[in-house]
Image (cartoon, rainbow, N blue to C red):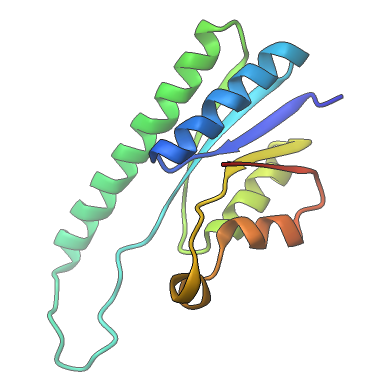
Length: 147
């Protein structure tokens, strides 16, 4: 069956359900768990004359986001370890969330990706796209999507 699961989380209530399911599944089948949080880069203004933010402020904000992500995956790894599951916490920094999930699964040799569907509908889905959909269509390993 599966030996190593990657669970992608953003700390939202829906992704917490995916994390719980991933921990339960890993425990039931004796698999390891890799918890991944993808931190976006600070957005740069695309408008000439827009609000400028100092590089120091950008670095501070990105560090704050990274620290939050680390806290989230550390909590996931801690919960998994408390359940007797070998777990690793990983934080990636990228605006390309789906690509980061796929790259982490490959790097850590995961044979199943577990993630939440974010349920965007209508115009938001068209404008923002779906990271889950991208992972589903591009992954070379099975993907378990939870609602």
